[in-house]
Length: 226
Image (cartoon, rainbow, N blue to C red):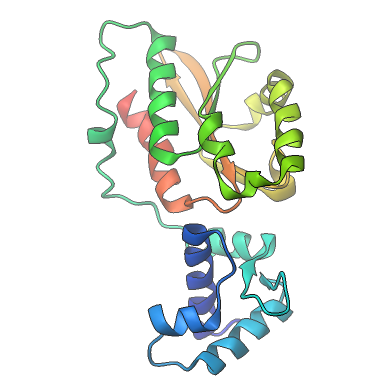
């Protein structure tokens, strides 16, 4: 059973890992987030979370990183959309004189720029678009060349992947790990928008270590802009 303190420790470990992309130590948490707790106390809490399968220690002397189970717990319990992100201001694009698909593509490019992730769009089951791969490949996770290779192969089959998921997306959905059609090392936030009576699926694609609160706000704001 997770105590309130363990929940707070897990939340902070995941938030810091999302920012830093490296193992989080008890000393770091004690200094930054839990000044009233000793490093030893936090280390014991993190050890318990590791035994529960929510954290993982990649090396004996390293701090902890979240497991897939830990990220799923975070999404179920701590996900909070950033309501005050002022997204409309950041999406200031002159779309009035442009066609529908060009408008969506421009929004996708801006979404990729703001999130620093890749964006995939399915205008139908047969018409696809993607942008922002350079942002994705600059993430620390993609220093692993095997991950780059595997992901590149998935992009080569983007049409099949999006075709399979098109009818399954009817509202905002976050898919991570083995649930994610782009591979178990990635996460995707999908939504379906409607413009001029045409349904369009848009997905924000990044590593499992993505800023879910920010990215959820970004993709949900597309409907407001459209």
